Picture 1 (cartoon, rainbow, N blue to C red):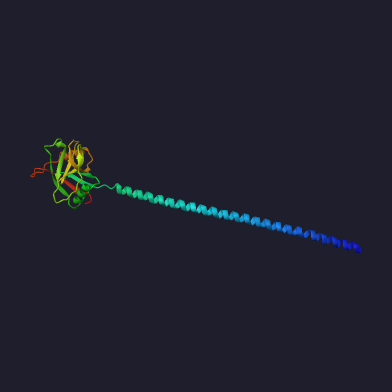
Picture 2 (cartoon, rainbow, N blue to C red; picture 1 turned 180 degrees about the horizontal axis):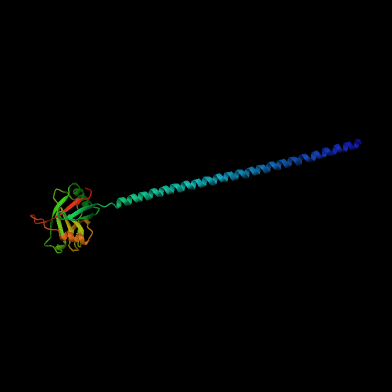
Length: 222
């Protein structure tokens, strides 16, 4: 009986000694597994944060690019509006006649003429070059000498109907028909070459009691 009890006690001690390492190993494995799981979850969170940061960076970059392109487009539009601005004068061939638009070129001569007309409308006598070839399709207007007008003449050998030139000193020359006249002229502007325009120039009556035709040049802004 005594031997039997001793055997049981010995068996229990052996079992406990064998179980302790096994249980300890299981707990270690569980801890390692939990640690690995924790690392995996942390990696996923870190990757998600990195991806979100990258997406936000791309969104911000796209926003900046969009804003920059928008500003560039607006700037281009503003520049186009400036470049498309054209100075015009209103011209009547004879008192009380229909007005036609003189489109001015972008140069100092045209700008000076527009500036002077802006301060005071012009009513000028009309003259013809009777001794010139093609005189029947051209006429000129003498501007009072008190107006200072710069010029940059070039040699012109042919002209189109509706073209307007400046000739020194203080003279505006209009061609209301195609011509081949050589001269030192500065380009000022042009009229639209319509039948109405040509008829108005040709049918402008001589002013009674004066002996000349007249032309009226007005600022549109007035």
